[in-house]
Image (tube, rainbow, N blue to C red):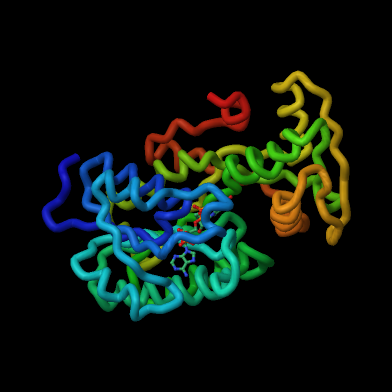
Length: 305
Ligand SMILES: NC(=O)c1ccc[n+]([C@@H]2O[C@H](COP(=O)([O-])OP(=O)(O)OC[C@H]3O[C@@H](n4cnc5c(N)ncnc54)[C@H](OP(=O)(O)O)[C@@H]3O)[C@@H](O)[C@H]2O)c1
């Protein structure tokens, strides 16, 4: 599709994984993209990230700004029609906490967008967000409310757990250390997953479609393609690898010992965050139909295809 004259997408979080992929998808379609980046950090390089120099080579305009300091980004909203916020404190260190980035930062960005006359804001929340949630989904819900309160027309996307992080990394890194996987907590609830590339397709389609026409200013899109428990997935990984895998249960508060530090600390932290999550099997095939997405299954993801 040809770029609309003067139409500009502004992305906060493009140095992360999801935001960088959406930026590339928009650039590949010939769209004008501006990304807000900060100087590189060790924290960023410890996880999956997007090189800002690559985005620049692909045609993105790169500007500097910090969601914790609204005066650093307000001017970047000039001439922008749609804003995407994938930025999050989930995998960052203080002062970039979830409270500061996903709640206060989201609110400040939505208010600035409204003031600048931006037509559409897409905010990435998380599945399970709601008033009764705890932990990350609870803070994401507060971020959604901050966006809602701004009066900015917006779409909130609530993706399920990314296969790349919660299967590929959390379980895969442990399996590489030997035939042992530790899971935190006594329960083994059903969890919902989605392949990150399918979220990229959904978010790109939402941005290209422009502001939704719903009566409510904020529209919520839940997105999940498959449900399974962590123990079931470990079983599938063992079968795919043709190797026996032992699953061990550790209590909340105990560290994972299957991998060396600093991996162990990060995996312990992530598994602890979801240890008490309620069971969920709520997949959303209608989203795939609506946006023409052929979702990637867990088995295809595990096969590395
Ligand atoms: N992974 C999952 O399973 C999952 C599930 C549901 C929802 N989500 C949501 O999906 C979104 C994208 O995830 P991701 O894995 O792509 O995230 P990510 O790789 O951790 O990227 C985080 C991004 O946020 C930016 N950021 C953090 N603090 C900032 C600040 N103060 N000002 C400006 N930018 C800031 C980071 O910039 P720097 O590089 O400069 O630090 C980076 O670009 C997040 O909102 C996440 O909560 C993820």
